[in-house]
Image (cartoon, rainbow, N blue to C red; front, side, top):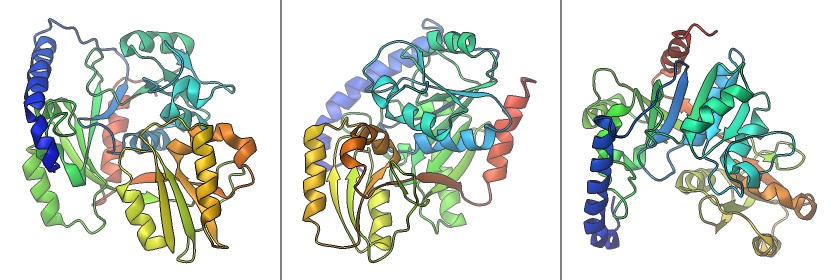
Length: 351
């Protein structure tokens, strides 16, 4: 819901709406061109500004596809220090390609991880550099219409459905609600664990999906934390005291999880995609040393972890753990989702 002060920004949202309406009409009537490829391209995106679980959804797709297909991911590489097209290799850092692509690269070393601001230009470059590629997953590209993906997956947060939101700056939407019609799959992410069939049907009714659109519901779950540098796993307990270092768009689900699984936690919150510096490092150490507990750890997200790895020398002796997050499909729908994706890829006869 809108915070009260954001109501004052509604006139700017109406202006933004007009700009988006004109832009989308120019694409609809081919004054601005959308290019398609005779190749399986899957787009994962949303209508809002972050926090819907796009990165874990890309990882979900990688897990179910990587053993059967040569896959590549293509991202813009938000906040990287480089420009143009690039493919991750053994010398790549988060500053080269951005935190989310770096996360893909570290977790899925057999997957080609590429970045490029202009996806229309980057796709041919990727296929030239990696000609054996059979599937490309576009990360956070739903609003970029220059490329027309064959399968569009749109995520919306259960706690802030796009049907109940407003355009920037009054709300969190960066595209018109009616743009959801371009999606083939709509995923309501971060659902509460006990979501009922009745509420499921009410949400579907609210979204009013077209006949060609499939709607899914997922909840998030956290797996075992692992040490950022040694990779050794640990368990959280009600006796654990946490210093949470967090620079993501929506930390609420993580905070809710910790509330029920650890003794106490303090949080150092940073902006989304924050690039940590030496002052941040000093702040983290100072805050951690202030905690008077024998059972204390520093906990961070995987996205933040790839940006903290550059401080290995300074942090390697600290109990700095990363908490992985994954999607879990509800209502026994995981197989149905997988079938849609694999049937789409199979329609290109490229297995």
